[in-house]
Amino acid sequence: MSSGTLAGKKIAILAASGVEQVELVQPRDAVRAAGAETVLVSVEGGSQDGRIQAMNSDIELADTFPVDALIGSVSAEDFHALILPGGAVNPDTLRQDEDAVAFVRAFVTSGKPVGAICHAPWTLIEADVVRGRTLTSYPSIRTDLRNAGATVVDEETVTDNGLVTSRSPDDLPAFCAKIVEEFAEGRHET
Image (cartoon, rainbow, N blue to C red; front, side):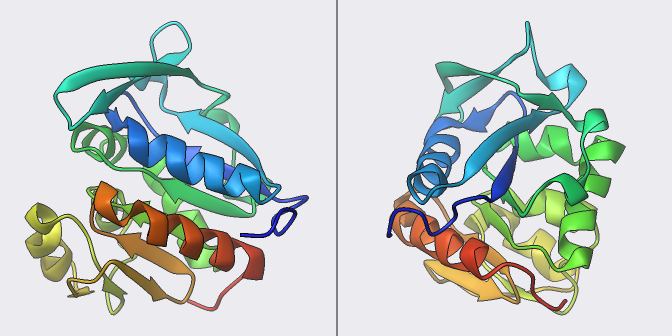
């Protein structure tokens, strides 16, 4: 990843308490290293004292992260791309928030690139943007993706018109490299 590839680009990271820490930190650091500015966006109920609680392996408390913006105060138009980290609780919280779902839907329908890893495609399912697309995810949500009309494959990383998905933290090196590449390219047709 060359420095400056994403210079001038503003990337939203949508996450709530329960986010898998490594899936938040490594993609964030990768796009920052490529020159992007990142903004951690969360749902009002998902943050405590302006911070979200990250987890390790869904069960062990990890660090907390300051929220830069609440979902109701931003729009997809404010950003070039979107990162959706996983963890089981995080996307389960996000998919129950109408503003978060609308935010995700706006990115995908406008053709802006989106990276989603692990359980994060649950929010894509709720936004009704997976039908007819090819994705991968954590094994336990693959039936949900199929039921929502997606073609599901078991690969390290899958890209479908700017929508990058990966299975788990084991795939982070490939996922991070691919989102930097896709985010540098910009808008895609959906």
